[in-house]
Image (cartoon, rainbow, N blue to C red; front, side, top):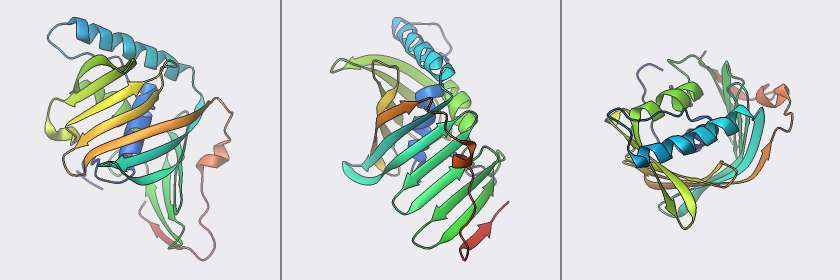
Length: 220
């Protein structure tokens, strides 16, 4: 199922959509729009409650991911998650790790490490904000496309900086595909596969020691 002062969440950042969808995949709150419950809203609530139940059973999780913009692949790699708020992204030349308090962004090609403190004002990995605040700011609806349950989120204002997000949910209540309409980047598609749940991932997988001789930019 990530925010220096007044910087808004922007899906145009190349790896932000991955974080957004991955967090929503396993931790969406069952929140409905105000103004009464229609049948479509009721269906959305059922789907969200299933996802919430799935999240409650997960201690850690990993998956392969691929991101495409306008049908052209631009990112792929592996993502790891562990309760609470621990994340690890492995890509060809970039390694991004968060232990829930500190984040490290390591560019292997440049041998450069950027270190950030995970406070809300500067945290690029604001998982809790994505998980618990964003769904409350969206109009939710559900449907079926080619036999697959699809949950659609449409922001009620411009704060979230995307037009819509369609989340495709498999029979295990996991999101395996998402299509995000981003006003800056265009249509972004994310595909997740090879899910592995509750592997007892080590906490050491979510900490990082900069390599000797690397260029360290510490912004804490």
